Image (cartoon, rainbow, N blue to C red; front, top):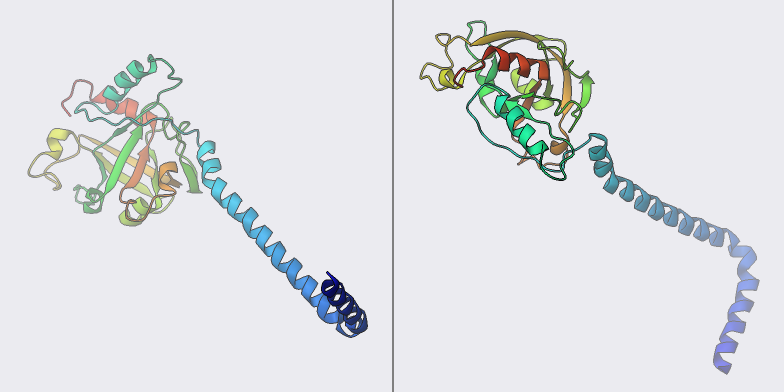
Length: 242
């Protein structure tokens, strides 16, 4: 204990004797510690914001709690409406919305489908509001398609790049039945589309479930069509074999 007191007295004496000459160094040391502490605290705050950014983004899109996928060879959207109606009556289900996959492709000047559309491009149409008010897509360029128009479409950046399209461009599109798609001559002008539509690309979008996907999983590019188009296809092809 006596030795410790002597050491403390020597330390205090040395500090008082040298403080005037070394106060600049002491001040620099204090500022350096404060700066490092501030950076560390700022990094922690930034990491917390980053960690919570995707959950906050996802919540802003009115996300679904459960996704169900099934295949039905029929008029576009018809089976989805029927299944949605049945699921909506199950216990604890608050709301059900869906989309339908379409065999709809941009057309070449010859009338044949654009071959780029056959490679990892998903063409889907909202049946009753999915991607428009539930699991809302986020527009990063342009605007969202008007759900009441059949001649407007939005795409992910990958889809627009593969098809070499830009916002504001008009696109000749062809809708094909499953029977046409199964034809050996499909992809040539000899198989004309069942329905031809001239649509305008009005926006580039991000789908909420693709934001944090690894590049290796980010395979599909999407073109999203409107509920109005789904209704037209159901009306036009009701009873047709798809």
